[in-house]
Length: 360
Image 1 (cartoon, rainbow, N blue to C red):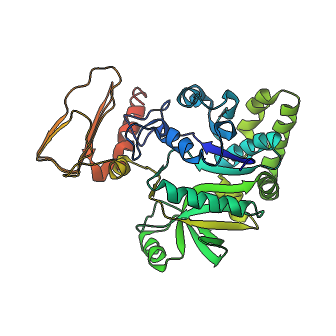
Image 2 (cartoon, rainbow, N blue to C red):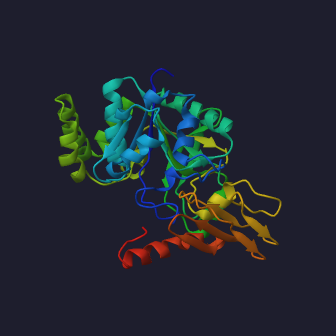
Image 3 (cartoon, rainbow, N blue to C red):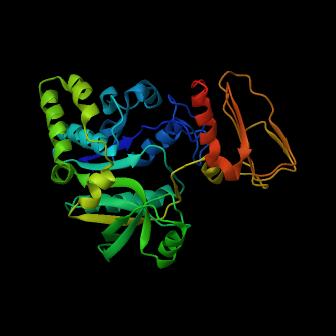
């Protein structure tokens, strides 16, 4: 594994977990996974340490989040926090980070992970990662597809083709987010996996496939690379990165790759997309409550209570005779809504923006 590196994608707008998440504190900084004390980004780094040490883990984030990211991950070298001047989707982000790795080690194999996902069975996760790395060593771009547990319409899917190994297959095609009926067919048919946004490749393989699929982007990255050799990378990023094509790595490169494989993963994965997901992942009492320390719940079931105040003025949160609520308290806000309307947090954010943006 001496040539293995990781890129962790850690941008984010900070809206789905209001009031805990804000523009300067998106969800990767929050403890929303199985461990109520561990931020998602730290958990992501910890899970991949068996494959590469901190000096070979790079975090791709926005310039406005760079300081907070360094503070959360002091064990990483400062130069491993790659700060994009503007958001241009994942193809420019991953393309640039791959070039940075290539300067250090032209023979590198790269793993790409989102920073804000959760995993329950970490041993099975590492088994899948190891198989994906092995595929990448065979000059193939690999991904991990997640075993569907429900007919989800919010995810893209991967249709598997001929088998390649223990749990790996050639990719037949990527499928856009389906409607409910088609999603049911995918789950029942057993030939489709969720696309979790994890990728594995050799540096040279990704650079070649990106140049073939997105030549304009490759030319822009070439200009940044030339400036880096002259010691002017930061200025080039400021000038060039904002005008790079804004496109996802999935649509722009991966789906067009001539050699593409998928590993079937079944390890309790979640993209932690809402407070509902946080409740599903959290430890619960006998009544299904995921409660904050000191909370008082009487004849109440299946509630999520989070006290995220940082001012030292924690107070008792008491729920009596209510079920299926989300209750989240921060230093300056209190959110209460039914769990089955967790996605409607965006309505609060939209209204706050309409009122001037305070609290967003």
